[in-house]
Length: 44
Image (cartoon, rainbow, N blue to C red; front, side, top):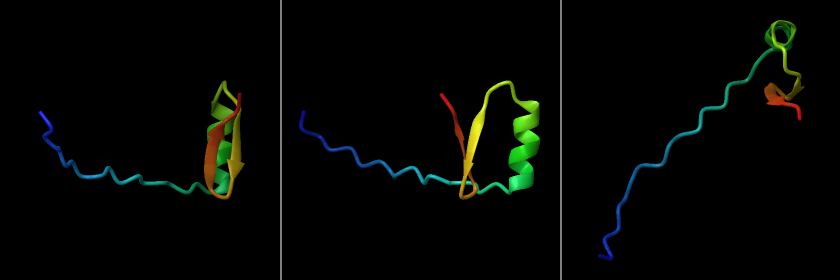
């Protein structure tokens, strides 16, 4: 039962947003987000 299963690694695709895209999304959202270097993070 010591069988090793090799699965391909899932490639993580980060999408970089423009400030305009972030502001448009933030205006339509009920939740608040933070924009940092093209990435958007949900705020607690």
